[in-house]
Structure formats: structure tokens, C-alpha cells
Length: 254
Image (tube, rainbow, N blue to C red):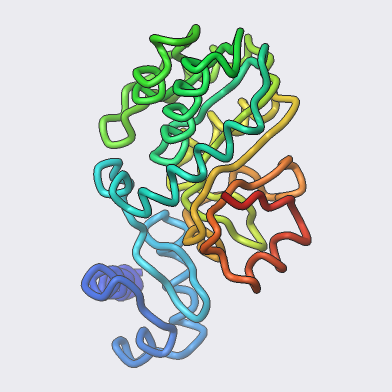
């Protein structure tokens, strides 16, 4: 058992240094068989210390709002603007936290201020969403434990709160969109909050830039993309990805 643990830590160290590692690299580094290397890699993935990728492992990226806020910012603004077109006067919305959904919140605030939408109510677990919308429509914040890196709240209290609502539409983000595992995220609390919101919603949309497609994260919260009414993404999506995922869910290009 001690050797297995040492080997596992060696693989974890290599992964931390390189960012990703292949099956062959694990075999070469430890001088072990393919089956042993696969077991070590599976163990790290099961412990939530890495994410399985084609032919190997990649490091699990820690969520950072500040970093993601600057990534693909123009595409996210276009996605937010396109998502607002799915909203109607009188809607009761759930807005997930994240750097793409806040672009929806900002676009929605402008649309309401212009008088193009009325009587919209929003429930969210995101402080940034609430700040964007509080001056122009009723906003309810779910309870829960504050998460500084995500600028939101989640956990048991928030989950209990969500059980009291009925939404006409739910808009969520995703850390990855995978053809096999569906929508994925980095932590269980985020997954559970969105699962509950989706279960209370008549329509469900995911907002994600094109780089999220074909990726893998820690766990799935919407394994069947057919559960969604659409994924709003940017026009940078490749024709191959558009064809592959478009066979499962409506892709709305911004």
C-alpha cells in the first residue's frame, strides 16, 4: 500500500508540474505496467485531484472569478445579449453565478432600463448578478455559505431556499460541456444548486463560450444535454462541434 501511495504522489507531482500527463508518461516515470498506471490515474481522478482526459490526466483547475472575467470577455458579452432575447416580460428567472451569466445580468438590466421588458423577477446566488440588477428589478439572493473565489453563495441554506421557488427560465454557466457527460463543473455545491434550479424551471439554458465544448471537469450536473432548451454560445464555435452538439441540443449563436 505504501508503494501505491508513493507512486500516486509521484503522478500528482508530475501533473502539478506539467499540467497534463499521458498514460505513457506515467508508465515511463514509474516503470510500471499499463494496468498499474491506469489504476493510479483512476485513483487520482476519483479523489478529485485530477480530471481524466483522452489518453491521460490533466490538472484540475481551481476556479478564479478574476481570471475568468478577463477570458473571452467580448464573446461573453455577446452571449449575454443573445440570452436576453429568450426572456419575456413577466418571467421569473434563476441566474446562476459566473462570468458569463453576469453578462446576461448586465444586458438584462439595460433592456429593462430601456423599457423593453417589464415585471421581471430574478433569483440568484451571485452577488455580481444582484449588483447588476438590483436598481431595475426585484432580486432575491439565495442563502448559503459565501464563496469568495466565485463571488456567490451555495450550500444547504441556499438549496433549501431554491425549493420554495418556481421559475419560468433558468440560465446557468458551465466549466465544461462534454458529449458524454453533459454540463460539468468543478465542485459539488455548484452542481447541486444548478440541479435544483433546473428542476424548478420550465425552460433551461446554458451560457458558455466556444472553448467550453469538448472539455471535461470534475463532475456532471446535467448529464443529458437534451434536458436543455438551448445552449447560447459565440460564433467562434467550429462547424464540427456545432454539428456534433447540435444533434443533441439547440445551439443559439451570439
